[in-house]
Image 1 (cartoon, rainbow, N blue to C red):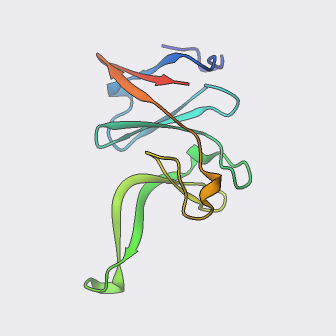
Image 2 (tube, one colour):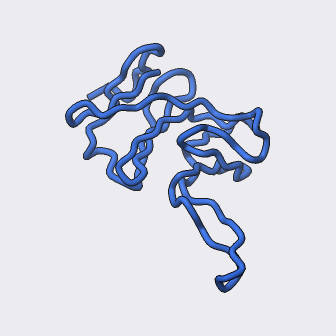
Image 3 (cartoon, rainbow, N blue to C red):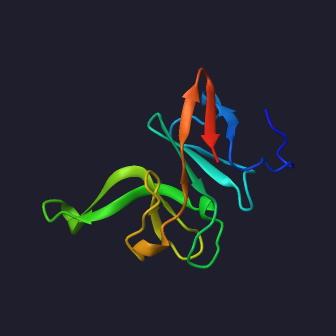
Length: 128
């Protein structure tokens, strides 16, 4: 695969893993660019985001991918989790970002960078 100590160049396609190396519900941080890129498998769909939180520069991909809590008065506790694993939350201050778009409700102008991902055969390829 790739040498984990050698950062990959930006601006081209990178084979970052095989599909089996990032099973649904898991992720992998790869050394692309200055901070790295997190690659996520959400129910068979792959996403890639910058490993950098714009709030205070935290290692975003060290946070947990999970859903979003919304109000639903028809359930006990009036809350329900939706869109499981479609958001990443920074481990420093819990700012949440949508994996597909990089947007955040906290401060929309501080969205994170996302990267195109495609599967070629059994390889996960990121354009960065």
